[in-house]
Image (cartoon, rainbow, N blue to C red):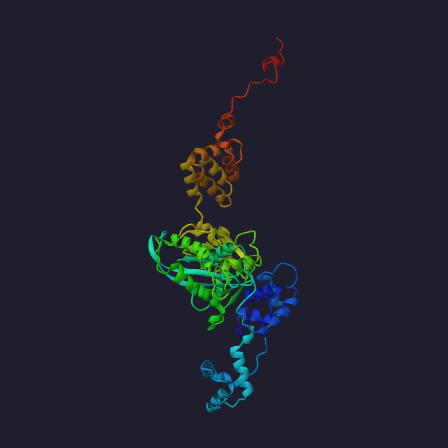
Length: 516
């Protein structure tokens, strides 16, 4: 991460950690950056008023402020280190354990003319080592949980009716060693987040930080290094209030609790057993976590995990009132047809963003489209592959009319419903057919929901009252007023008016008589 400007979402994560009282060294370690960079952003956030009691600022606010003030980690470019030309050689020798003094001698043999201090500074910047004294093995109750995946073999999936490769997910509370285990068939980000949700509900609370392995499982690599998975996981972390703490590469002691937990699950709970399907396997795992793993005499603590969990339970952060709705963030390009593609379905966005890369925020029921941290479109999620979700306002005005049915086609569709509907649509389109085309379409489509017979009656009623508007027909159907045919008849077929005479005598009687 050194030498690269921070992303807005990385900066927002820093600000969130500042507000939670995290130390610079811990933040630098978890976010894989230098302490100097963290210190600069802490001073910047304090100056901008982001560390007060107000709500956490959104990405758009932070981005706007950065554009005004400039990035805190922006540095003037200086001379390149003489050691840079030998970077690959230095990395190779340092991984082999060569000390800086011996390394300087080897570099001299390769023509290096710099000083010992230059080599030392280069190595320190390259490795950014953390003193060993800050590596803790035991933690306070509620402080930490560790998560990891392990391969669980082939299991029967009742949804696909096939045998599939399965993985066991384990979350272990570091203080008590109490754990949650579940078998799944994929390592997608939505599955990973949903497993966290169920694990927190199993424990009845949330630890302060979650340590994830960044070497073995593809998903754990993704949530650390892939922008899409990272954004989805961070939203869950913000909702539940926990911090994401990656393990450093080649340091297995940092995740020993969960790694031993995964081995224990595989060797004790699953080894030598067969299950009809994943459903029975997970039922067995839930019982095993309470009746076997939870009651055993742990080899390190020499106490039962459930006994220590009684102490840890009260230290966990309480579950939020609202359960987290699993979110998937994904980048997508807005194509020339004004649609992005997400899971083989199509969603429209304003045509001014054509050719740009946008962010999609998808839940089980909706898909939002964001540009520069601003939501520009919202759709209900498609129910099937290939479905198109289009808002006419997103299309170029010059192209819109060509996509809409011609008035003649709408009139023909209305005629198939009935004469009253045909008369209603003809009247509606009579004055301004282009302006009222959408309304006429809407009237015809009401037959899909309410049936042609009811639509015909509703149009007859609207005509009787002289209300030729789409909203009138819609309300008549919603309130079932179309079923009251007596009212329609009294207006549609008026009775003959009674004969009234202004004068009692005829005009002949009123004419003056002529003399004989």
